[in-house]
Image (cartoon, rainbow, N blue to C red; front, side, top):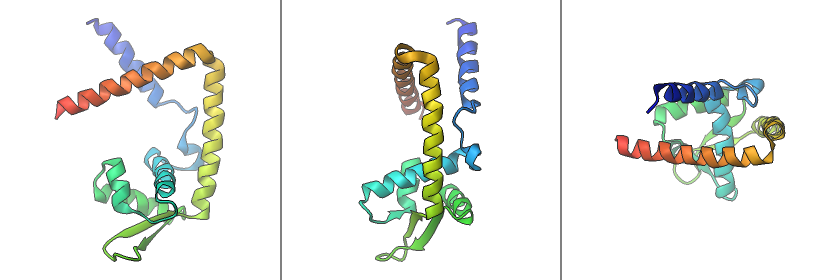
Length: 150
């Protein structure tokens, strides 16, 4: 395989990671905190108003409990989530978004939609469809690679 091709792909992937088109720093968050808010909203919708537990978040992220707890602590100090002892099992900790957390989600969603809209407008429909297809293939390659790696 052409080493130049591999280098160009790596350079393109690093460049995408550094893009600032839609970024949580605009609302003062790191990427994990940003993702956690969106995940918490999704998990909450699945429980139909029930409780979302730290263990649910940990399982979804496939992160260690201390790492998840640290990120949740950051969000709690900022006032965007609340953690409480579960009603029916005192060994569990329930997590929910605060009004400020919901406000940040709405704001980030607007910024993301604007940013994605600019990307689609620049690429055009045909190239956007091709990019979606290729990103799906890349995701599948990464999944297969990570399964075979361990």
